[in-house]
Image (cartoon, rainbow, N blue to C red; front, side):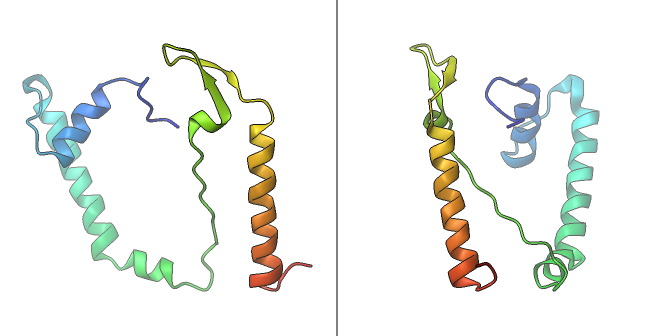
Length: 114
């Protein structure tokens, strides 16, 4: 939600530098170099320390659920593509379906909810 096409283009410049090997703007080479070094340090920690494997197989790991819903399913847009208001009842409809699926999962698949 915080990286939409309505945000500043500056984040795209750094993303292009990090992931598409594009040259940093001359006026910002120092800060881009620092960002690359920070990115590499994070990568080394995440993939070199075993933290992912320890987290993935930990009995104490919290369980989470991520759900992505297309914007056009819950929001109307005008002819120019600008937001024009919610699609009436659609959020409730989707929430009911997701809730029913979760209830089935916990009650039938996991046997932990009556």
